[in-house]
Each structure stands twice: as C-alpha cells, then as structure tokens.
Image (cartoon, rainbow, N blue to C red; front, top):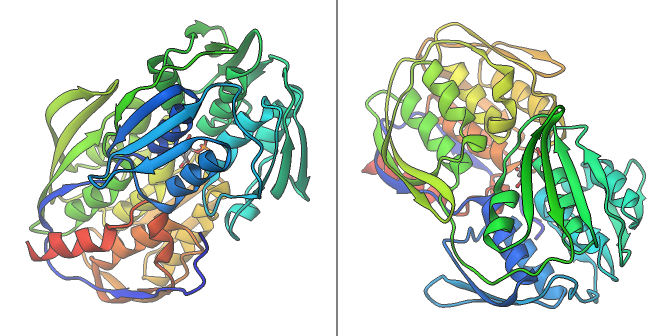
Length: 442
Ligand code: S3P
C-alpha cells in the first residue's frame, strides 16, 4: 500500500482531447459495496468495482475480518458476508494505506463488534484527524486509543452491545455520518444522525437497498437519519456507476484545451456529488447530459464536454459538500478563466489527503498563476484562456487529486510542469495516464 519509489512525471500542452472515456467505478460506492456485502448473509456480486488501492485496502480489511472476497476473471467481485455482528477479530493491524474513507467507516463497523482492531496508514493518512469519528464512536461505547492529536495508528476496541446515540454532525462529513450509521447497524435500538448540511448519501441509499431499516425525515436542524440496529442485510447484485470525481478531471481538461470534444460515459449524477458540474456550467462550460438513466439506485448519465471559454465566478459556498473532492480541479479551471474566481467556504480542504488549499496555492503559483490564500479557500486570477507559463516543479504531497489536477494543468502549460510523484494516482484512478494518452491522440 505504500509508494516507496516516487514516480515523477513531466507534461506540457499537447493539443486537444478527443474521444470517449468510461471512468472507473465510484470510489465511495465501491468501498460501501464491499463493506455492506461483507455484512450480508450470503453471496453478493459487484460489477464495476473501482480497483484502486483505497478500495483494495477495504477489501483486504473485510477479508481480515472474516468475509470471503474474491475477483472473477471477468472483473466481477464476489463477497460472502459474515452477517451483521459476525465480524471476526483481525489477526494483524489493518493497513488503510492512503484511505480516509476505509479508516473512518471501518472504525464505525468495529466499534459495535466484540473485536479489537488496529488501524495504520501512510504518511498522509497518519496526519489526518480521526477525532471526528473517535468522539461519536466513544459515546457509543467503543474504547479508542489514538496517537497524539487523535491520529493513526490507533486501536478500536468495540463494545457489544454498543449504545445507540443521537448525533448531530459538527462537520459536514459523509464519513462521520457513515461511521455512526455503520456502528448503529450492530447496535440494539435506533441510532440517529442529524445532518444539518447534506453530504453524499450513498450509505443511506445502499443500506436501504441491502434491506436495513433506515428512515430519513426532515427535522428542525436538518435531515434526521435513523437506523434500526441488529439489522439483517440481504446479499445484492451491485453495478457501481462511474466516479464523478474522476470524471471531473476530463470535464476540466476538455473545457480548457481549445478544440477538445469528449464523451464521458456512465457518470454517477447523484445530486450530492454534482457540484462541479454546476460550478463549471456557471463558468460557461459546455457540458451536456445525454441519456440520463438510473443504475442501482443512483442517477447516471453520459456527459458531452466541448471546449468553451470560461469566466470567473464566486463559487457558491453552498456547493462545497457536493464538490468537496473537486476543488483542486476546479482551481485549475479557474486558472484558465477570464477574471478572478473566488472559492470560499471550503475549510474541510485543509484536512484531506493533503492541505488542498495550501498545496494547490503553491502548485498554481509555481505554474505562474496569481492566487490569494484564504483560511477556507482560494482566490485565483485566471489567464483568460491563455496557456499558463509552466516551467514548474510541483509537490503532490501523497495526494492523488493534486497529482491529477496538476497533470491537467500541464495540458495547458507553455513550458513543462513536473510533478514530483504521481504514484498516489493509483489510489483512486489507476488508468488515469493511459486514458490521458488515448484522449490526446484520438
Ligand atoms: C467520502 C466523503 C468525503 C470525501 C471522501 C469520500 C465518502 O469525505 O472527501 O473522498 O466516501 O464518504 P468527508 O466525509 O471527510 O467530507
């Protein structure tokens, strides 16, 4: 799971992108497919699973806790679950690699099982705050010993039976929401999460699909999500839709490089994930949805993206939860827009795989873009469609989305941009550079 050998990469402008791309399966849905299948009784089948390192870390952890997880030659994954309450004591520490989603959701699962698990991760993950899940899970009775600052490595000693809680999310985080709901799955009674600001709702949709008794109501302080514990999950056949976060790189690449026209197939259009499309359209991007349809409880469409001159906007802060992973690539779009884009209200970017506000500010400045750093975002002076000066060395800071965003920026740079290490791209989009090549020569 670690990347001992940094893999540098150098790029500069290479002409338009053309052709069709099918992005890999959605990362959030892939993690949840494996976890929920591992808790169902019987065999689930998963098609289109993202085979990135983060999801493979989840697969390995579910195996370590007793599920039988295999991959057929045709790429279909089969999971024989142990049933809610049936997770086994892992024999070694669970290596979560770079994956915050694996860590926080699995901490929730362990919290209400009679097992103890140690979680370790890479340098990036070991710097990320886990207090946000430690707090509610401790209230449910889990005994959690973390490294200083509530960080990894940490150990979760589950309590069985755990205590149901009502928890109002202090940060807009689908990971915290999901950690509490997953702990609630094996907790007698009703566990409630109150979500003042909506975040991605894949856990809710999928848990219902697996047969859990999960209710959602509107309350005075936001959505109230209630799960009835000691649930029995039924095995499913899941088809994972394409990852809108991965699609975002190609949306921006085609928008900023003149002469580009691409079709991105099979993109998950769940409204809690669609903020980047909204923001790019506000900037004047030419993105059209084709063949909107439903796949496994999620809205899906193909997206046709043509180059278009972009204009600066004030990015509506209300979009933040629905495009939280897309800010780095939105910042790249802003670097090519006419005028000054202001993106605020995204403080959570400070605690992602890297501090994405500082990392992108440094990267864009190095490539010749003027920026102003705010506590909760960036102001970016766009080039008005001109190539960026480039001639930059970029530190990707073990952050896949920084590496991919700056690679796209490289496609609009006069002189080369060198990224110090693109190996973290394998955590979420192993085929990224192959797809880039195919779109550039098509
Ligand atoms: C995710 C939730 C988001 C997101 C992450 C995936 C999930 O994190 O940034 O990439 O699958 O639940 P937060 O919950 O920390 O906002």
